[in-house]
Image 1 (tube, helix red, strand yellow):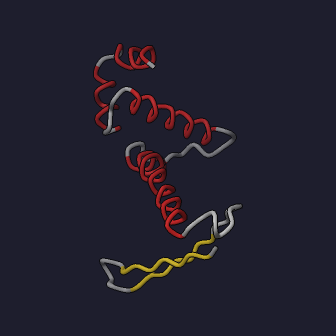
Image 2: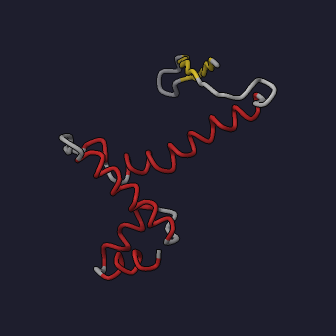
Image 3: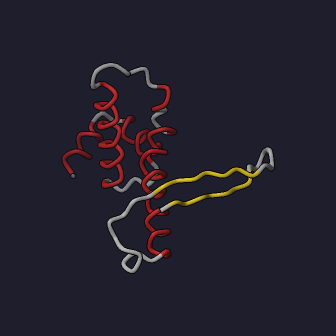
Length: 114
């Protein structure tokens, strides 16, 4: 399917358009437009919940680790940290990182509790 999104840039007040393509194995009878829209919004839920946190809280875009498997290892460590903090009840990852950095026992307690 072809999906075209249009929006107005708040700064320039110009219209912007983006086209994306999606593939599904479901027939049109099995996947209604409402379901497809919900799936696409669900993708952004993941983007905002994980990738945005990695970009903002961990400043991942400025990472200088680029050779070998280093970037993948660091992404895995960041994802694991985010997951552990969420399981531990922290909704704000930056606050959770600060909380666990104050006492060296706290990260170990978090690992044991999961």
